[in-house]
Amino acid sequence: MPTSATTAIHQRRSTLTPTEQRIAAHVLSDPSRAVEHSITQLAAASGTSVASIARFTQSVGFSGYPDFRLALAKELDRDESARQRFQVSAGDVDRDDDAVTTVRKIAFAEASAIELTAHQIDVAELERCVQAIRAARRIDIYGSASSGLAAHDFEQKLHRAGLIAQARTDQHLALTGAALLCARDVAIAISHSGRTLGIVQSAQVAAGAGATTIALTNNPESPLARACDLVLVTAVSESTFRSGAMSSRIAQLAVLDFLFARIAQADYDTIADNLQRTYDAVTTHRID
Image (cartoon, rainbow, N blue to C red; front, side, top):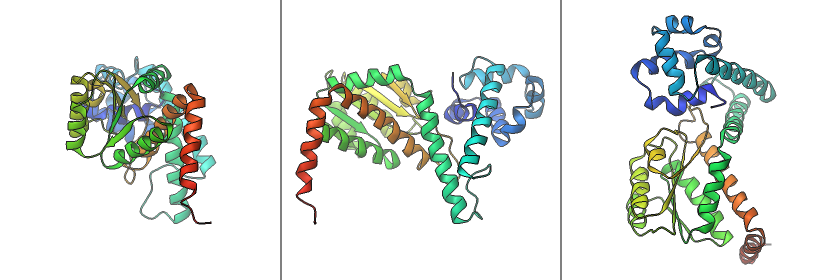
C-alpha cells in the first residue's frame, strides 16, 4: 500500500476513469480539505458517488477509503514538518517567489522525492534486479530526454565497475540493440511516465529476444511496467516547473544509486579494485 496518497494519485492518474479523474482533481486541489471529508462528504463535494470514491481509492493502490484517508492525513503531517524544516509555505514555485524561496521550495520538493521513493521502493524487487544485473553478459539501458541523462549516469557507473553496459538514447539504436540481446542479457528501460513509445517498444523487443527486462518508472500501472519482468517505481508528484524533468530525474538517479550500491556490495573486492583502477587512469589527465 502506498505511503503517499497524493503521489499514488499522480502515479496512476493517466489510468483512471473520467469519474476517478474528477475525484483525483478534487483531492489534489486541496488535500487538507479533502482529508476532513467522510466518504459521503467527499462524494458530494466531487460530484460523484460513494461507490465511485471506493473504486477510486482502490485504483490508486489502497484497500478502501479509510486507508486512503489515513495515508493522506499522515502525508500532510509529514509535509508540514518538512516544510517547516525547509522554511517554505505550501504550494509550488510561484512566478513571484524570490530567489531564496525558490531555492528552498525546489530543495524541499527534491528531498521529498528521494525520501518518498526510498520509503516506497520494493526492496525484494530491487534485490531481484541486482541479481539479474550481476549475472548479465551485457546490460542495455534505454532512456530519452531527462531519462536519457539517468541512463548515461548508470552506464558510467557500471562501466567503471567493470560491467559491459551501454546507454541507448537513440530510438533506432535502442531497438536494434534490443534485437541482438539474449537470455543472458538485461535491458533497463527508464521512463518517468512509462508511456514513452520508443522506450516501451525497446523493452518489448528486448523481452522478445529473451533478455530480462527492468522498468524504472513513476507509474506502476504504465505500459512500460506491464512490458517488463521487474519494475522499480519512483514516487514523484509533478508540478508546474518540475514536470517530468527535475524531481523525477533526482528520484531516478536515487534508485539507480540504490542498485549500484547493492551491486558493489555483492562484488565488493572486484568492484572496489575496478573503481580505483579507473580513478587512477584519469588522474594523469588533470592539471595540478
